[in-house]
Length: 397
Ligand SMILES: Cc1ncc(COP(=O)(O)O)c(C=O)c1O
Image 1 (tube, rainbow, N blue to C red):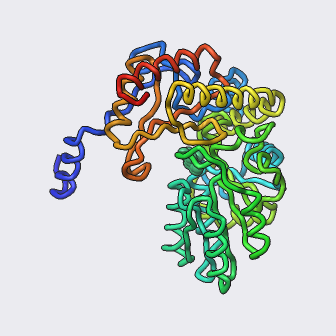
Image 2 (image 1 turned 90 degrees about the horizontal axis):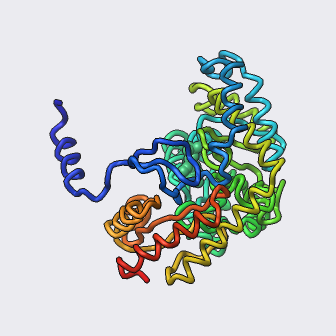
């Protein structure tokens, strides 16, 4: 294939490094145990399927029903072809779940984040972002800087003194937006939302929380970081994904005031120029929300499982990052080590992804365990046996 010389050399060099293995092939639905790389017995500890709903019969059936009722797709953007009733039903359910007056669905949370910054901010405005925010927020800010010339600042991770300094330093701005993850995806820790809100109130700032890892996960009934922090109904704007706990297919949303959602409907470029969420996905997400409402005990089981696995890791001699969520990272240092541990665990029938640079900072490569309500104690114990075996082979415990 003819290709630009510089690009070809760079791609070949990357391949030669051999650090990143090819993607693991999954040949079954997401569940506690999956078929991967030809093995039918792999316990998955690396999925955002936090509530085990990706393969729940009601969620799958709702997708099929939506396919029958609405057909394969939307065939256009919403303002051109009309808005399916399933989208409106879903948006109402989302708003009720996360505690806002309204919500607006997107094909992904990535799109939702991009539309928030690029649509709501101009050159007189600033977005102040946590240092460890997800890539989608970082790129959303880059996009806004490029398109609308919005200003940006970054505060040290969860450092409220630094956030306050950034708020003070931007007193001349028309709007100050503070953007934070709810659960930080690589660390597994939770944003200090009550403190952020208090500062935002004092400095007249607007708070946006990306709750992608927290929707369906945090709080006693899974309503997210706001429920966990006791500030439900007080967040100006929440973005999140439907591609993790809420069915896991794809999709995202912005939840906020009716006026903000209407404005984004009319002005956000991903709304105006890109097709709506497929109806099958909307149907499955709707069923996932209904199941979450009806069975909050799924959330309790998720919390208990996460606590149990964390305790077992510590008892075995591992040193996971401190935290209180189903994301439990074990730091290993070099990328090659994280990849090696992941490979050895897969040989033992446990799938945990190793993360290295550039996904996490250099020297902080890790394996990131993610726990689900779908895991039984037997699954977790079996996984722990593999962790102990691999951990002692690698000299970690
Ligand atoms: C915090 C956070 N925000 C946004 C996203 C993107 O979500 P989506 O897959 O819906 O685009 C992710 C996905 O990994 C995420 O972890």
